[in-house]
Structure formats: C-alpha cells, structure tokens
Length: 319
Image (cartoon, rainbow, N blue to C red):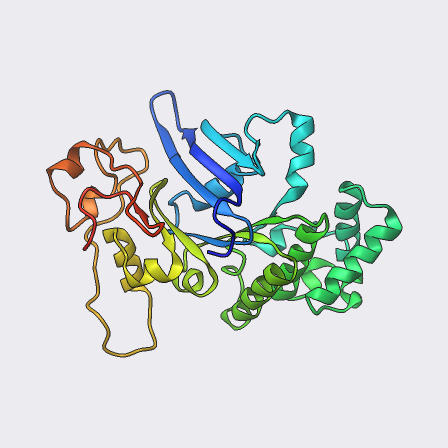
C-alpha cells in the first residue's frame, strides 16, 4: 500500500445507484458499495463490461446522483455538499474518460478547449496559457498541437491532452475510466506508463477503472473486483493475483492471456450473467458459480476482511 495506514483520501459507504426502466423494473447498477482509498494509491477497479465500474466512477464526484450511500473526500461528505460547495470540490476530483474524441468540441482548436477549461477553473488568461504549456512539457507534446482540431491528431495524442485538461486545476485525485481501451494497442502502453509517471511526479491518487485485469495487475497498488454492481473482492494487487479468494476473481485471472506456456488450469464459468433486471435473492454470482451451496441461494454475502487487508464477499471462499 502506497498511502500511510489511516491516511484516507476517499471513503465510500454503502453507495448505490438504480436506473428505472419503468414503474416495476429498475437496474441496480451499483449496490451497497463500500471501500476506502489511501493517499498516493493507484487503486484499480476491474470487472466485465456492464458490471457498474463506470457508473461508480461517475458517482464519486457526483456527476450522477446516487440513489443512496455516502462519499467522503478528505473527510468532507460529497454526497451532502451544496451545489456551490460541490463546484469547489470537483476540481479536486478530476476525471479522464474513455473516448478522447468525445471529450473535445470538434469545432474548437485544442488550445481553445484547454484555455476554456483553465478559465473555468479560475486561472487568469496568462496563467492559463503558462499552465497548459507546462503540462504539455510533462506529457511530451509540442505546443503546435494547440492550433489543431481534434480530428487532426491521433487518438493517443488526444488522450494525452485529455490528461492535460484534467490536471489543469492541480487535482490531488484522478478517476481514469477506461482511459486506454479506445486506443490502438501500440499506444496503450505509452499512455499507461505516462499515467504512472504523472502519478509519481505529481503525487496523485488515482482510481483506474478497466475491464483488462492484466493492465490493473501491472499498474495498481490495490485492486477491487466488481460483479453486477457489487464489490466481490478487494486486496493488494500482488495478493489478489497470487491468492484470489472469490471464484469470479479466479476466473477473470484465469481467462487473461499469458505469455507463459503451460500454467494452471483454466477456470471456466458456465452460462451468462443474469439480466440486471432479475431479482436474485442470494448471491448474484450464484447462477454461474461452481462452488455455490444452499447459503448462496438464500443470502447475499457481505464483503468482509479476512486478514492482510484482503476482503471477499463469498459464503465459500477459495482456499
């Protein structure tokens, strides 16, 4: 763990979000999620597409309103903040989104977009330009890109500029939501290394959301695994990948391609995830779980710590 024990920058308590389909049906996109993040951590959130990762990322700075629960940033409750106070908190919790081409106005030059963001955060015009040029140096791009339109540069360059925009107000906390998944494989590693370098140089705390468990293993200090809106396991990255306790986590790790030949036996899951509209009385993973028992069909398991900061929500965790 990078942050000192007890030095919590973000605390999430029983956070939930439901989206109504009609008067009788609702999708529980995020359900009773609780976790803490320590200052200076690179914290990964991983799971299959549709598990609620991105919704969780947007709930933290209240880009969407939660249905229940609380979020505390530096001890202050974000979920109870007034609109005025929230406008002062959000610059401290910046987001980097998945698709860089959807993050910029296609009709504005990139310099105009970045200056507009800097002015919005209260920087005087001269200071705004100086800040943008300073950050361009950190991401190894020349000032020439500022005169171009988004369509005139590559996706990798544009995502670097999205990182610049997030860093303009000097936030201590970044939420990176699938920041490389829309890019060519050839540039993904460059962006990942850049993110890690910026985290170290600027003393950032980062939530890194991804469906790619290998990327999370490479980057993160701790990792949380989500399944159908709930956290099923949280542990230090090395501990999680060496000793997964939840059958779903083991299956995710097993399914990831490896360069080594041989290796362990693949853990294959049967069936598909249930519909998000299904009301499953017990564990939501039970329809696919090879270890399910009677308790799994009746009661929802609670995320509980089992030692060494390793938490799992499972009635029958793996040995």
